[in-house]
Length: 128
Image (cartoon, rainbow, N blue to C red):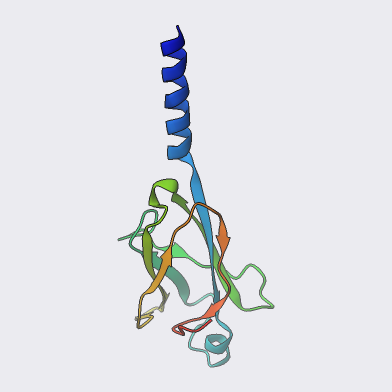
């Protein structure tokens, strides 16, 4: 009986860890692109892609401006806990009706086991 209880506890702990997730909120300040009309809300889309699930080939996420007065577009993405310590390589890009504009260099973030809200950065800028 004790062996069955111990086995059950181990299974519960293991499955609980497998189901845990880390939430990352990505924020992008689009004010300069809005001012020069290189990004037009409602006509263009702002997306993020990366190398780890749930991002990846064909699994891009759309950023939205939840508070239009600040010009910051955001998306919250939950990553499985198995990626703790892994490097997420990601980029933002703008999808226009006839072309796509990608950031020049990839961004890198080491995933931890805690929820994170990244500070707003400017599209294609690499200094915070």
